Image (cartoon, rainbow, N blue to C red; front, side, top):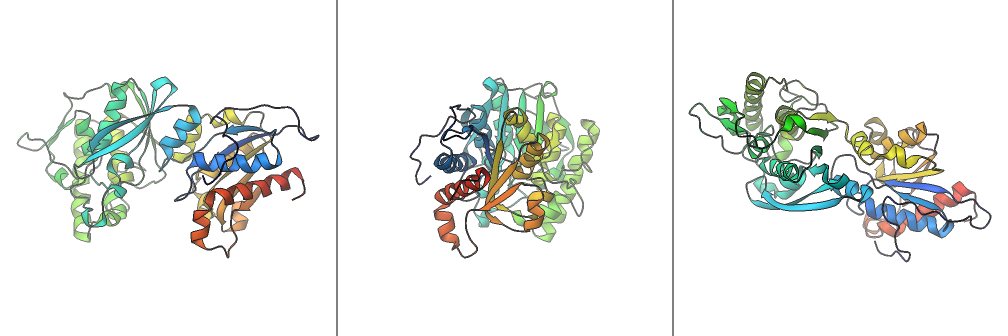
Length: 402
């Protein structure tokens, strides 16, 4: 943030003070998503807090930065629950070493993993993207490391992948052997799955049947076919039409062998095609459950508990539009739960579109910038602009003069 004259409250903590200037102290929950490209969810919550303090310095503030399973999920959950980070060197999408981190919550019982930190598209320059050979091996290394540290509950965000291997690399990192007809281990990448003959489970390093793995996935694509992983997401990872057909056939082979050797049907499962089929792989090899990302995160941070006794909730992200409402993104999930508890919700965003549809799920909206504000200025001053917008929203809500 550019400025923060007051030290931030501990994230997740509540500070109570006596009434101020005749107004009873308000308990306000700050639950913003990241403002993509400018502020993390934690920074956004702190900017909102500064705006509130200008108007109601004695307010009780509950910091609950949120995420919806994508980028920033580890940071938001660690901050909201007082967790910790762990970091290790893993194999990147092209087998290059990548320093990746994950979160441990509840004293290490729960691990939070973002697959993009180990196997993400952002880790590769455009000219090196090739879903035939990229691997999820590093994701498996993160899972295994957290398991070895004692975690038995896992939250896995699978957005932003560079891969199309159906989670095969992840499975190999967990100790599964994916073998061809000669009994040799398959190489990395989705194309190699065309040669898959059988899956050997004897080398698995942990008892994943005793673990709980929940996957944050907001897509419903099946593993294969014209709506599957290869056809829908392959092109953005560098796949030509010919490569899409090759990868789709390879994933069909993977699904068939999983069906025969592991007894799990993943080919037509909604969400199996997420992250190049990693959704299917997590279900097949760890017994994972696929869940909407925002709701999974809200449960993990115990948002419903944190809403108790609140007078107002502030949420927001970089842009609010029809997608926010229709696809249950983070701020919409916050609004649903707050309204169910009878608590008004104000959303603050850099931009607000489809005003009527967005207004239907919030009790108030505030934009940080006007339509004439240059984009460069809006991004450079995101923190102060969010603070100012929060101050305006609180003054209006408390019926105080500007």
